[in-house]
Image 1 (cartoon, rainbow, N blue to C red):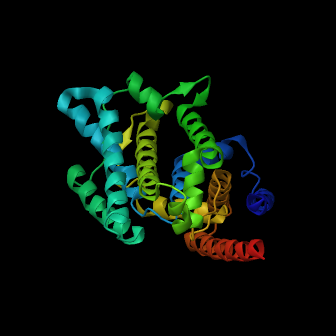
Image 2 (tube, rainbow, N blue to C red; image 1 turned 60 degrees about the horizontal axis):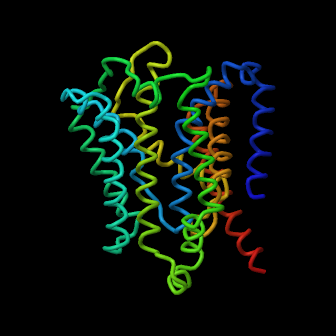
Length: 315
């Protein structure tokens, strides 16, 4: 299993950080790790769905910041969260649809199409927010379901994240759309010849990536309500950091940028490794540059290993 090596490295890192700082392997710090993974892994899994078809989305971090603000603005217009949340998710879906159409219909490489969309949304988010965060005025049943509540003692965001990972894993491994996605990334022309709808498959995955990014942006914006505080829509949340870390998690977990290969379990393993690396370095007092350096090495090593594995498989 490609994910086995990542899990092993993560276990070694946990043991190492625990030996350096006993606070690492505690219930309180486990909550910190869970919060990081819950805010990152679903977006990483969505990137896997795109990367297996040979595409990528560099705008997900900005969609992550956009959706909470759309939700807030609709609420401010007097329509409430009951309308604001669906409108925000639809706005995210529209971004994904545009990314897909520009890539598939206009034949603009997804790297360029989504990079342009990311810059556009970055400016748009600042414009609609005036560069300032907004506090959600009150907790409602809708905010409780979308990230601001607890069910059976478990944070709702954790439940949504687990459900998304299970569903995407089933889709990718067992359902026609997932099989078509892998086939598209493996052999574009061969897939088209046997009747796979290449355009629809890619566009659907672009929409899926944006919708997941938007939904998890809403979850994180509402999470303050879970702890007795207020939810916050912040234009600085997500952004380029989330985009790059989601791609890094997918690649570290065994997904190939060349398409045709990737797993949702790998995205989870990669997200967990990044969380452990970041949190562990903070606890042992290492500088931020060390985290960036080690993460860069991990990405390069993982990609090189993926390429070699494909060569070995062909032989």
